[in-house]
Structure formats: structure tokens, C-alpha cells
Amino acid sequence: MTVSVTGLTKRFSDHTALDGVGLDVRPAEFLALLGPSGSGKTTLLRIIGGLDFPDAGTVTFAGENVAGRPARDRRVGFVFQNYALFRHMRVADNIAFGLTVKPRRERPDARTIAARVDELLALVQLPGLGRRYPAQLSGGQRQRVALARALAVDPSVLLLDEPFGALDAKVRNDLRRWLRGVHETMGLTSIFVTHDQDEALDLADRVAVMNAGRIEQVDTPDAVYNRPATAFVADFIGNACRFDARLAGGGVDVAGVRLSNSGPACADGPGVAFVRPHEFAILPAGAPGLAATVRRVAHTGSRAGVECVLADGRIVDVSAPLDVAAGMGDAVTLVPTTVRAYPA
Amino acid sequence: MTGSASTSEPRWLRFVLITIALAFLAVNLALPLAAVFAGALAKGLAVYRSAIVEPDARAAMRLTLTVAAIAVPLNIVFGLTASWAVTKFDFPGKSLLISLIDLPLSVSPVVSGLIYVLLFGLQGWAGPWLRDHDIRIVFAVPGIVLATTFVTFPFVARELIPLMLEQGRSDEEAARSLGASGWQTFVRVTLPNIRWGLLYGVLLCNARAMGEFGAVSVVSGHIRGLTNTLPLHIEILYNEYNYVAAFAVASLLAGLALVTLVAKSLLEWRFGDSIAGGGH
Image (cartoon, rainbow over all chains, first blue to last red; front, top):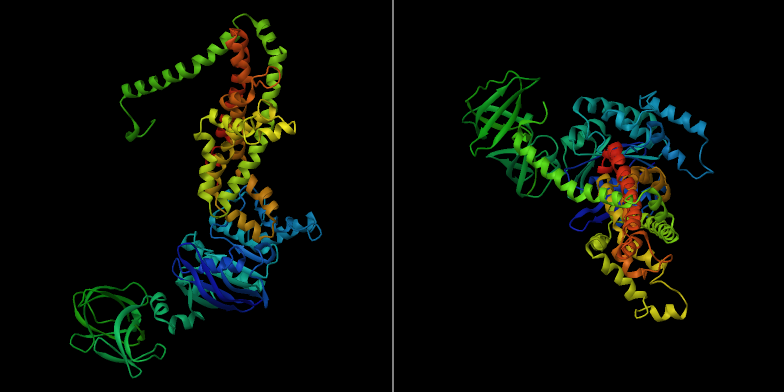
């Protein structure tokens, strides 16, 4: 099902959480809302789910405006950051909740509900745990129960708020793969909020990068990473180093070196340029470029991590081939090989 | 090993502190309580029994139970709605409402009683109208119920608001997104989450409703057998130098208080976590 929002604005007493947000989510797409805290991503998710209501703008599900419709009439599955499992109910009752609150005419009989619960427990790989209480489960298990509970009502959209936020790294990675698998099996339109760019880039079909109540870019992980549309995205995604630059004639001047601009075309003038760690060449001292001193070299991975100090004291991490000919204390010149520049 | 180094005081200091605390409790609580029961039984069980089954005492007991039976449910409803409103919604005037809930605790009970005399008494705003329609509120049971309800209304709400604030709104939001109506959400999610806190608040509310003296004294009129609650009846007996009867009836009230205290302790012991909040 297509989920679209247009012109969404939401103000809280002291700040604007959403400032005219528009977004189209395609059927069966797995979309990540990525941004720093306070960027409005959770507010956007809650408005789509009917837990908050916008001051202006529309929310449509398959072309139908649902902006005024409360959560219970939207058929969304919402998975909360803290899981929000009902602690006084057993796992099976938690999962069955959405079915047991249906109006009597639509409510399945007890046997159908029990069968559905078993089916969902199997789907989330927790067979036989139906009689436990949430307090008796690990974080990862609770997360999966929360997902099963959301899926029990056959939602047309699945919304997940920081689904892996409260889990440790190992569990998080396993769950990520698994959730991606569940998404593909169910064929649902899924939207998840995260502040973790690795998670967004790794998991999502497309990533919507948010900043200060606006969407900066909606694109595939590849495009968001390699072709950031705005300076914010270039800065936020990946570990980029930021330089003041001059934009002129389609090129960019950084530290006295003239390079072609890999960022979007823009007018001449002052700008900011971003260079990723693997986009520097390390040349001997004296060449045109950024004079630097090597502080540390770490050969711990598929590439060498070279920590350099620029003349102005800034530290730049450079990722170089393992056979890099730089040692601690060497004076070198860093020359950017790829630069994305944006108007300042 | 008992106690860590940082909390272990010199032995003598511990001894002094504990002695002071126990002595204070003995003088202010245990001794008076013992005196009540000793005074009640001073002339033997037969006198004790007759003081309790005497018609005026029974009327007072009936009235006290009636008043509590009306005031406590009213305050359960009020306490639940107020805490629900305060903790699950944002609205203008919210902090004013929270302060108002505390009002009966900060106002002298005598003033609480006077409010109703001023409102519904013969000289009050609604007095003439009530008289014309032959409705008695002050110096009658309705006044006692009103005054008691007013004095006891913070107890349930004050117990629930911190608990519900700590539990947050996400359980309710989850229920709503799963299709539950407001009522289903309340009965199946909110109420079970707060049940022990609610019970605790109800116990406190009930104890106060049965024991309230000041406010009730102002609106009651002290009509024997009609508008005397247990605390008022005790005062009358005492003023008539009928000490044994006064203590006998007082022992009933004290007994009620003790039952409440035991129930409260049991609740705290059994469900301490969920009363204190959280319970995750």
C-alpha cells in the first residue's frame, strides 16, 4: 500500500517538529527515517500511525486521506521503542490483544485466535513461549513479541520506532537480518525510525534523511551515501571531513587544489566541501594540498587507518591501502581525490 | 556482613538513633493506642459490649459506613478520571488542576466544612432555595457525605498520578494502535497496570473517610442517632464523662485503622514494585 504525506507541519509549544514534510512510500517498500535526535523523525512516524495529529498537511493510505482518523481505525502495526508490551499479560495474550478487542461481529473465535498466536510465535521464532510474561523475556525476545503483536491484526503498514535502539550490538545485527526477512515475507509497507546510519543504509530500500523538521533527501542507501543532495546529508552520512571551499566554474577549490565537484551542480561562490576518509591521497610533503603530520597508523582491518593532524590542528582520519608508505611523525600532503561541495 | 562501610555508623550512635525513634513511636502511637483499648475494657467485656451495641453507637457506625460507602466510590471515580486526564493528555490549565487536587490537604478541615455551611446553610447562597424545596443538606446526611468527599478526594488521585506518569503513555498508545477503544484500553491495559496503586489509594481514602472529624463536625449538627458519625459520637460520649463508652467506640475506629494499616503493609510487602511505580 502506498503511504503519502504532504505538507505535514507539527508544532509543539516550544519548537517546530515538522516543517512542511512530504514523502511517498511505495508499496512493500522498506523505508528508513534517518536523522539526528530532534529532527522530527519520530513525530513523522507517530503522525503516520495516528498517534499524533498534524497542524497542517495530509496523510494518505492508498490514496485515501486518513489524517483525521485515529490510530485504531488505520490498520497500522506500531512497534514502540520500549516495546510497550502489556506487562500483566502473558506473551500469548499480548499477541492476541488486537484480535480480542475487535467488535464482537468481527472477532475470531478463541480457537482461531489461539491458532493465529501460535502461527505468529513461530514466525518470530519464539514457539512455546506463549505462557511467559514479558518480564521473563530478553530484550530481543520482547522486541519480537512486540512485532508479533503488531502483525496479529494484519496491518497494511508496519511502523517501527527505533526498533533496535535498546538492544546490544550482537542481538541487533541478528534481528536486523531477521526483520528484513520478515518484511520480505509479509510484503508490507514498512517504515522505521533510526538515528543509526549503518542500520538505515544496511536495511532499507530507501532512506529519508531528516534534519530540523524537514526531509533533506529520500533515496537509495547508495545514492544517499555517494550522491548526497545537501551539505547536511554529506556531513551526516559517512564520516566526512568538512572544509571551506570556493565554487567556481563547475569546479571547487579546496586548500589550493582545484578539483571537479562530485556534488550536485551549484552556483559559483563560497561553499563547503566534504571528503570521506578513503577519498584522500597521501603524497609526500611539499606537493600542493593540505599539509599534515601523521600521528598514528593502525593496520587493523582491510585498510590502514592513518590519523593526520592538519596545520590548523584539526584531526583527519584517512583510510589508505594497507601498504601505505607513511609512518608516525611523517610530514605529508593530503590531496582530496573526490570532493562534494555545496553552497555555504 | 550487614551494611556497607559507608552506611555503618558507630554502634552507640545507631543505638541512640534507634532508641529515640522507638521511644517516640511508643509515646505517640503505641501508648495512646494501648490506652484506648485499656480504657475501653476497664469495666469488663460486658460494659464494652453494651457501649457498642447501644442504638446511638450503632446508628453512628451505620452512618460512618454509609458515608464511606458513598464518598470512597465517588473519589475512586474522581481520582481515576483526574489522574487519567492529567497523565494521558496535555491541556491548558493542567498544572492548576494538579494544584487544586491538593487543596483539601492544605486547607483546614474546619474550613472545608464551613464551605458547605456557607453554600447550603440557611444563610448561604443556596440556603433559601433549598429551604423552599424542602431539601436538607447541612446538618443532614448529604452535608456529611459532601464534606467527607471533599476532604478525602486527593487520596486516590495523589496515589495514581505519580504512578501513571512514570508508566507513560506508550501502553495506551499500543492498545489504541491495535484497535482498542478508549474503554477497552482503560479496562484491559490501564487499570491492570495501576490496580495495586489504586487499591492503596482507596485504603487511605477509606481510612480518612471513616475517621474524618473536623469537616464533618461543622456540617453535622450532632443529632444523635441521625447525623453522628463514629468520631462525633466518641466526642459526645467523652464530653458526657462516659469514658468507657467513648473508649469502646474509639477502639472500633482504631480497629478499623489497624485493619487498614495491616492491609496496606501487606500490599506494600507483596506488590511493593508496582505500587512504587514501574513494575517492568
